[in-house]
Image (cartoon, rainbow, N blue to C red; front, side, top):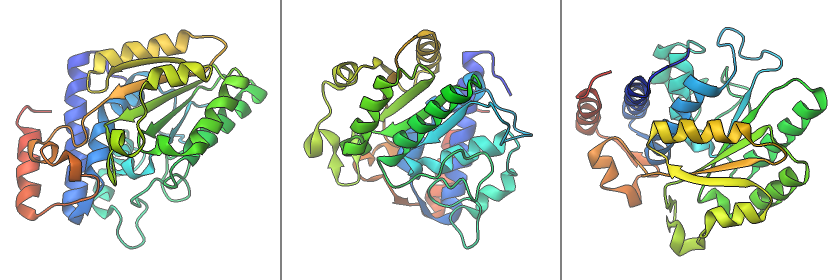
Length: 277
């Protein structure tokens, strides 16, 4: 499924947030903040750039996506359901007993998930390994990965960054969901990342920073990254944790894993549906 206009992409972002919030609201609790901050980049990736066949989710030579910040799985499940890889009715089973949709992404449970993640710091290493494998096989696949800013406190992120540059992995494009918050507080107070672009450049990467809720800016940044030769690319996404529902945005410092009451569930869905999709 390809979306050709930016207005249609924005509409799809609202729909994906609706499906994600409905799944979390039905359960009554979930990782809202980091799921919602990631939606726009995931939509641009899955509807404009990622080369895959929903009818053959394990197709050889397909592009791969590793959601290293695996707690944003609910947003990715909504996109997989919209593509028909899983049924939309299955979204209501999120994180329930024997579900195929656990809180964190699991390739052994969920069709369309390319790597099991959730132990923060490890996903980028996996993406680097997949990109190396693709180079060896010469299958033409591109590998995408999304990491979190809190996750970037992990030393393994920077080990993987060094190795990716050493191997000249120009088939690897990574996003940092820079929503400025992590479980224990604001990223700047716990372990600041600035100057974040300069850090990635110093590690041998091409890096740029864009508005992570501007689908046009994200799309153009991915196009530029795909044209880079000889080095991996990092796209820093400036985002707001919980983007899309006003009362979730207002508690951005406390919306990592949040309870949703039936009243909030109804109100959030109504707000998301107001502009239409």
